[in-house]
Length: 381
Image (tube, rainbow, N blue to C red; front, side, top):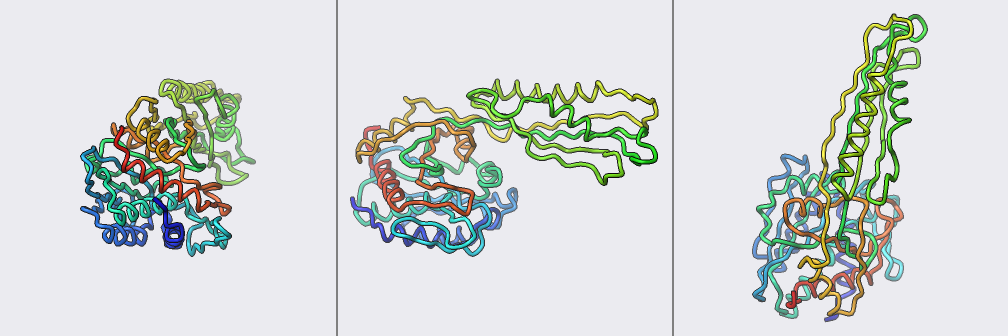
């Protein structure tokens, strides 16, 4: 089946030029509601997640009936984009799409959405038999997967699916790490730095001593740790009373993630506990508070899982050779897998994402559309 290249290009351009930064996705949702309605969706649902995410709208769940007696699958994309994202204008040179200005392009993740739309148009026009399909299009993915986290998994009838959301092409992501977010608050004692410095307890110095000891960077082939922000102090003439540090630990192993997190906690607690008052004049003692929140669980698929066997068979049917990789970051697929919905990540061709140099090739979106159609029509798995 021939993909309508120019129609795909026009739809992609239109979607990119609809502003949809995180929490301001209403315009995108309404346009998608219109498109999928015209394509004969059996059901279009906007969920009630906006009350929890703070977005202008909820997540979008769209169902299409199938004529093949096969279990449904879902395709997942996100409608939000990173900033700068207001007033996007698309520049096309040949078959390469970039931003025409100082904004991102929006191929993350509108390249995936555009391929879904074109695939559905083609199967409808060709009256091609296909399995039932759900589209799960989330808000607020770029600010912590919070749209997917707020989605009631009971709204998804399909038991497995594919998240169309990765850079590169002809690539399937089968593993992604879990993530712990850590907030460390070191509490000292304020004092005038010139008049009575001995009355104070310098929280910044204590934090620095701990930071010099903690594991950071790449810990091993599965695990990383990072200390990303530090805030504290009021002025150069005041002994800093409080320091707040934000950190993270990621790992493909839940056990390793827990172990590194506990090591970080132990180092900060020990550093504060070992503090001593050399003059005996301090007006208090330091303390530390540590909050740990698991942002998402690890994603791990095996080659024999039906969700991977199906995409492999679909790729073979159109002569596409896939590569399989582990990712270093999380996506909505982590959330769906955590709900017991096996979800593989399929790359869409986007590159240089989260930057104003973002770009995508039309041929990659064409081939992604072909793969989606093959997934809808493949009967061997």
